[in-house]
Image (tube, rainbow, N blue to C red; front, side):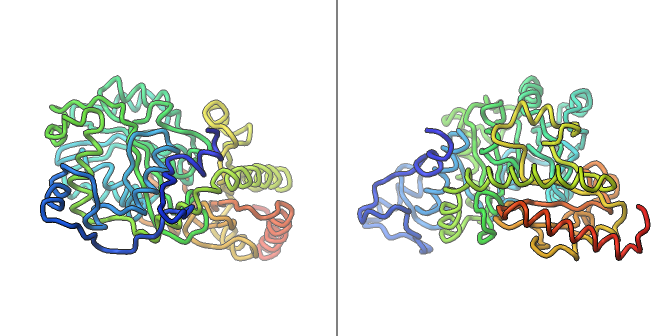
Length: 418
């Protein structure tokens, strides 16, 4: 099936007894069974079935199946948020003394999470994205995984997933990719060699900012070394799916960050229009960023779709259907950034991406507030930076709104040059 068809039909079981076209919302905490023997088998992983929504739920399972099909993986686990999905993805194989090697260009929340890991004896080493020599130099006998974002948020650097996966596998390490900003519409990381793909499904997958959630997908291809990852040893019988089997039976079950059935239902509704929305949003981002660059040369525009972007070549080779729906602006000062943000009328100022609406934010004072100065700079965050997540509005309306906002910014700046 092609992309938009797969969004409707991929991973879907059309077996509802009442003929419902969506899996119903099983809004229950626990599930009844007819015998103690049956319940014992399910709890002992000797029979399929549902017992408690923290462990599994039909509505959530349907969402997981659709994302597994979309990403081209073997299994998925849905969590209460994108950060919960990342936490589960990492801690499933990490223990005290282990190290993570990651691209330095990351969402501020991920950097905060890595700082929290330090209390558990887990170290994170940050390196410049796509700098293969620094990646090689950072890997040692304690390294247990490589991590990067497909499109850095908000740096907008584009990871060469194929090369990074080859480097990781040469050292016997799994590659975990956060694909939130790109989605499977632009690229399927598993096809390029990634082993685990994480999506904050609160963003483009949901599409309407009405449900917090996250999901991780296991490619089911990595050959786990059970000496290097001893926690997986008892799940060796599951072969390349040992990672998912351990997570489903351990950390995910016991920490309880499960996805609610209601949010799983909302995500499935949003998922069906992912391709249509991403096409429109990518087209709008390309048009709006190019127009601002041409109309206001004093404003620095960063977007992978612009030919002068250092990431344009990689993005062109790796992506299909566009270059993403996010671009950034550098206005010359924090004061100018705030003036521009406050003058815009259509975009919403809030901490999210991937909505049907255009969203704007000042990262340095919000999502990257708790990062160090060096971490901000490495992630492409500066005091004069604005992140724009472009929606599906008519492009002429967006241009007119940014035009009046820039004009107002200049007037408030008393006409001074940047």
